[in-house]
Amino acid sequence: MKILVINCGSSSLKYQLIDMENETLLAKGICEQIGDDNAAFTHKVPADESKNIKTAHLMADHGAAIKLVLETLVSPDHGVIASTDEIGAVGHRVLHGGEKFSASVLVTDAVKNAIRECFKFGPLHNPANLKGIEACEKIMDVPQVAVFDTGFHQTMPDYAYMYALPYEFYEKDGIRRYGFHGTSHRYVAGRCIELLGGKAEGTKIVTCHLGNGSSISAVKDGKCYDTTMGLTPLEGIIMGTRCGSIDPAIVTTIMQSRNLTPAEMDALMNKKSGMLGIAGTSDNRTIEGRAKEGDPMAKLVESMLCHQLVKYIGGFAAAMGGIDAVVFTGGIGENNPQYRTRVAENLRFLGTEIDEEKNHLRGKEVEISVPGSKLRMFVIPTDEELVIARDTMTILEAM
Image (cartoon, rainbow, N blue to C red; front, side):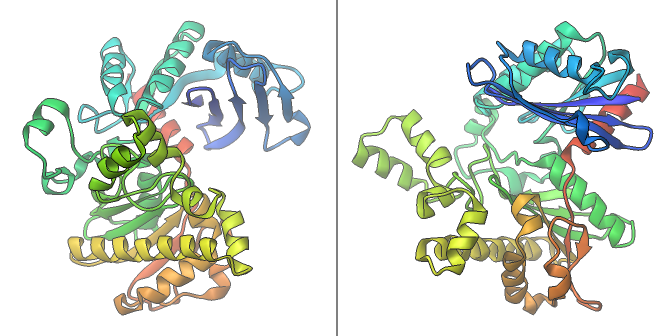
């Protein structure tokens, strides 16, 4: 059985084809700038690089992009399957499911309507996610499964997800903390539990998904207890272009002083802030290099991120009544040893010490804490697509 995993953006479509018999990645790629004259297509086959493609290719819409992907997957020169009939189902990443979905679901008209209802919470992502679902439905006669970024966090208690606003805003408008990167936090937390002995009950883990978008989650007994992102992915720690948590009064203060509209203020906080706003770049590798050369703004970004990581990890440890392990994942979490070193040094009071030789491995699963550390630390590369494929397969088997 092969599962096609789709992640649609407003003008992009990422995909992976996974053979679920042995969970092998057969092919992956991305369609970029869909609907634009500069549209491009990249297709990679891990087992045979001669089948890789990177080319300009016009795609009028997401339907055309899906059609291109399917044609490529079966083509004599670049394909990995004989027929699209080998694809048993499609799993879709969907950003926001509100309170309606705590688990992945088979797509129905009711599910699509619920995704539409969440457009207000994920205006950049949910419409694109739905476009991908509807495009696949038109071209493929196979089950479609929706896997929600917010699903893993639906186990949070009300005192963790509520905001101290008038309660009617929660009751009537759904204003609450939802959390994101759920498939990533679920994957690495599950893998960490395996490394701790395999029993979820009694475990207290903090998972740090660090990339252009970043979030931290407290995972107690294998379930999300609290997380840093909120109603939207804007809340939490400093990110590539997002400001993270700020004093809410800053919003009205800047809007009044700069005469900004709500849309302009939203764009400022989401697309022009974070690392970009302080250091002039959202590329952490560039920031890392400039910091080593003594650039004060780059060094400030690094110090802000490390301070916030320690603050949230320590806070979540207190909230859970203890902590067994910290997991680093995501592009930055998996590939930046010096952040992990700085965090570990500030958490020595919790009983951790790291092996610097192991810590300098990049992008590999490894325990970086020394034997006997009370607080263990791991680097676990995330695999959100595999989580989506597994959920899709489980739903398919239950049909």
